[in-house]
Structure formats: structure tokens, C-alpha cells
Length: 104
Image 1 (cartoon, one colour):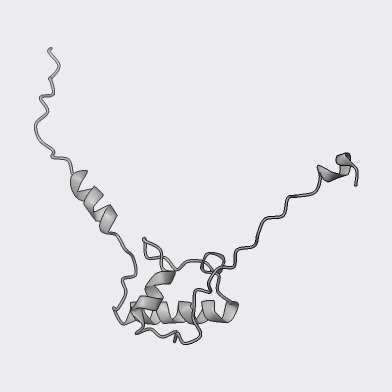
Image 2: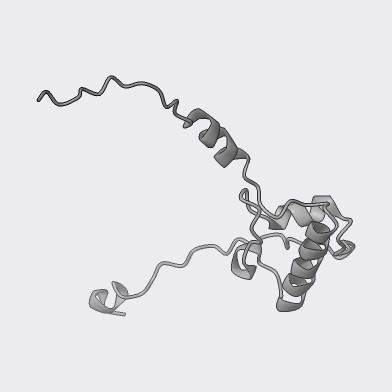
């Protein structure tokens, strides 16, 4: 191969196999909170299939389990703890500011 053609080839990286997010013995169920909590963001949103690295069938089952857990109040619909803290500190007191009145 010429040196000019070699520059276009990408260097090969060693492939690193990632562990699957679900083990073969894991049961996708609304009561399995340790499993379900791995697929929810800090804000309480369901993570996408791309982020989770799940199959389509697994993602559907996870989504159904999360929604059932939310309905049964095992999981919150939203996780607003950080917003709550920010809202408490941002509360302003409204008081007399000493506005001047126009002189006539």
C-alpha cells in the first residue's frame, strides 16, 4: 500500500464488550425497584433505549413496569427535590423598598 492511501484508513481500536444491562435471571417487574431505578434519570424520566442498551422488547417491558410502579406510588412521577431546594432559596421577601413620591 502506498503511504497516500494509508492515511485514509482508520486505526483499529480494540473492541470493548460491555456487560448487558439485564442479566438472564433478572425479572422485569414493577416490584423490582433496584432494577427499575437503573433505567430512570435523576429527574425521574425514563431513559431511552439507546442509553440503556436494551432490546426493543426489554425497553417496552421496562417502560410498562415503571409506569405501573408510578401508578401504585412506588415511584414518583417527577423528582423535583433539586427544584424544591432552589425554589426555597429563591423566595424573595416583599417589603417596603422606600419608593419616593413625586414632588408637586
